[in-house]
Structure formats: structure tokens, C-alpha cells
Image (cartoon, rainbow, N blue to C red):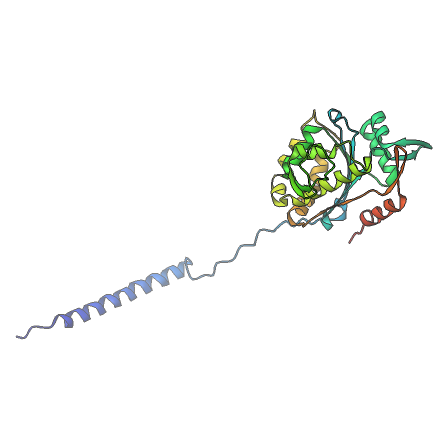
Length: 295
């Protein structure tokens, strides 16, 4: 009797296994389908709504900064900041401390108003000169001001050759927080207080533009708390409610803006020891930054 070849046995064997798989597998499929376990399309869940917060012109605000450092043997430094987060713009105007104006039918000076009545009187004087409303003020001393400079990361700035204590040749050089403080409180500028005010505005504007906006925005909450809680170094009427109201718009401006800061030289004329601001400059500044445009 002839032996069957191995291949003739293997082929029917494999076919039998294959048919068995089909039978068992097919039966299982129909059973699961009948029970509703498979075969039904899975409904897609609704996407989580994304909260979109947009800036509006309601986020505009004006702050008067006052740098009070008697140890520097220099007059106080005054800086007006107008912020328009929707347009991603921040404007700085250094105001000479010897600015004079007629307030309540009497001649007054900015530095004298501050000396006699503190931050509130400095705000009132500046509001009268510019014809605007100043929302908040922030008084700083050396410790709190240098802390802000450290947060922003310093600045590369062309220090004028006339400034003693700097290795200056008129080209840009990196300044740390202490050097920035020393520069804007330098009392011997040849142009007097108007040059010092202009220097303060340009330094701060450059520092904001050179800062890493995303980094600043990411740590905005903690940095705000650090500055405001330096109670021995600051005096302010900025509240946590103010911060909460505008922080999203400000952070968005920092993250998405490009060269957001600009500075303006306060035009005017010297009258012996005093400075008289030019009304044309003030009107132009208000036209640029105080004409509200609501959409």
C-alpha cells in the first residue's frame, strides 16, 4: 500500500482549521453585534468650550510712577505710563520734576506738590497739566525699582558720555538694575531735569521692548505680588481687583506684542529753574493715546 505524501495530509488539516475559525469567529461577531457590544458607531463627545478672552479699550489705563530715592541726592523722578493692551501699545513720558503750572489759581510745581501732599497731590498736578484722569499711582524706592529692573532683565542702552561712573562712548552697553537706577537719578545732566526725564523714559521704554514678553507674562502673577507686597518700598493705590480686571489683557499684550513700548520727550521751555510744558505737545499726546475707539 503506497504511503500518502505529507503535503496531502497537511492541506486538508489547514483547511479544516481555517473553516473552524470562520465558524467560531463569525458566530462570536454576530452574538456581540446582537448584544450591542460592537457594530454601533461611537458618538463623539461635545468638545470642551474654549474660553476666549479679548482685550477691549476698557482695559486702557494710566499710571503715574514716582521714584523717591533721597539717598541719591537727586530730585524725584516722575513717569507717566499710558497702556492700551488692545492695540499692544505702552507709552512713557518722563515728566521733569521742575514742571510748573497754575493749579487752583496758584503756581505750583510737580516736585513741590509731591513734597507737600504726597502721591495724591502729584497725581492731581499731573492730571491738571495733561487734562487727563490718572487711574493709579505707584511710588517706588531703590529696592522696589531695581527689583522691577531685575524682573525685566536689564537693558542695553547708549549711555551719554557725559555721565560720570559709566564707561560710556555713546554706543549701547548692557546695564544691570543698579546701573539703570544710577543713570536715571543722575543729577548732573547738561540738559537738566528735562534731559533726565527724557533719559528715564527712553531707558524704561527700551527695557520693556528688550524684555522676553512671554517669560514676563508667565510669571506675571508672582512678580506683581512681589512688588506690591514690598510694603516698605512701595506706596500705591493699585488693588488686587485692579490687577485681576486687567491682567489677561496685559499678559496677552506681553505675549503677542512686538516692540510695544514708546517714549515721548515732553516738549516745553525752561524759565530759569522751572520748566513750562508745551500745550501743543500735550494735545498731540492725548490725541494719540486718549481718543477711545470702541468697536
